[in-house]
Image 1 (tube, helix red, strand yellow):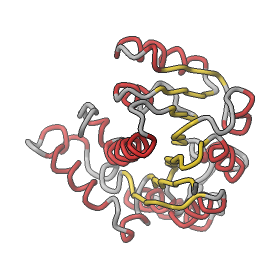
Image 2: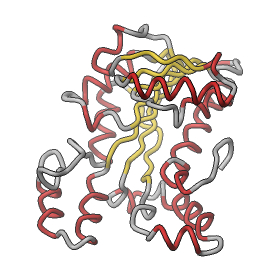
Image 3: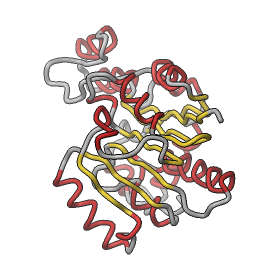
Image 4: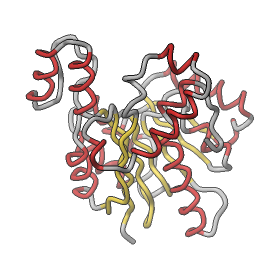
Length: 252
């Protein structure tokens, strides 16, 4: 995928990166600027921040973990974009303690809503950080993928528990505090005043295919990446995706 390395880990990010890159390109063209100001909330070690900076954009990463921010700094330096990546310690519910309102052309909120007490407040804060006509990239754990995964592993009671639990958790040992459906994420985005531009299913098959098959079968990686891209926008597959991605656009 363009501007993105292609190890097996790219199965987790390829679809989202392509959507995000296209959104940034459109934002830059509409603004008449080559470099955008991007905010990555919960951006951690820079899985998306560093590639965005490699495109020439200025990226601010807000993350509560000092260790993650240290790794981000090192990663940005190794990629030669240290001057375009800034890390600050904080979280999305206290976002405006560390960054300004209305200061960014795009906001990334990836893997954050699962862990905050008030997801709707988190989305509202992300939207409040956007400039007029800005874009929000929202990525969160999908309910259906967890149900399917537990069932295929033979944990049928846990699969039913996840299906019936209001937070989508399969039990006390579940490491994810909250999961969402595509409809729930879309409602969060539209409720915060954005237009829902696109919804994608992420890791529809990647978490179900044996790793040995992908790693050893010639061409399997590329074929799986193409399959993931082909089904990402099809609503029929959103209900079984491990993650869901929603792109929101701020109305001028």
